Image: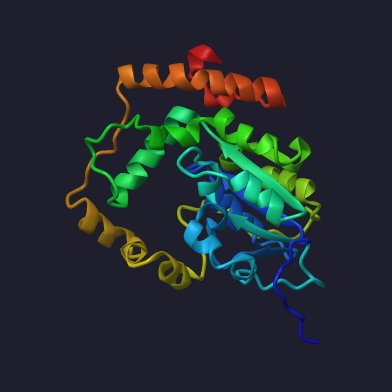
Length: 278
């Protein structure tokens, strides 16, 4: 018998990988989409709850991103790192809580300084910024403010509905981390998983749809890596790294945020700190 597919509803269990950017969200999304009870969104990062343009289309547009089979699927999943880019992107927690009545959130973190460097170099690669722009601009630093981002959610989503993960653990033992997420989401972890290969970029089959949603610039983004390098960077350019002074400034800003995460959530942030601070 042919499966009956339908759009999710506000009562459908949702699993949202909400960030942080450059912390393995794409890899986790790709690993979990292999689970037969997970219905992944056709656009990996819809960003619906922080986009005024998309929200104007209504929740029906959002729910149409899934082909949900109630007989097979346990959760509908998406992964939008824009949901943890406060204050540049606002109101995602309240909007998510109002729209989705059964939602669980996954938040990945890594060394906040390494995350800043990774985002900065990613944006150079994408042609959004120049190599010599300030690396510690608030827009780049904000996603590394893990306390700031999590505090936005605590007044809208119960703490037990949020799972914090270490990106280093995901890279070292993806099977173990994926099983943790399955337990958190009420999924059977004991399935015949495919190999947990390293994921570099989103492997979604709907990049054309993603491009049509976002506009002409993403067309260039989805060209082969070598072509993009020639368009955006010309000859190979060394990756930007923080100077000692920049690292000291960044750590002064971000150490209290890691301390808060460890204190409030009992989450071990040891892999995210300089060796001298661990």
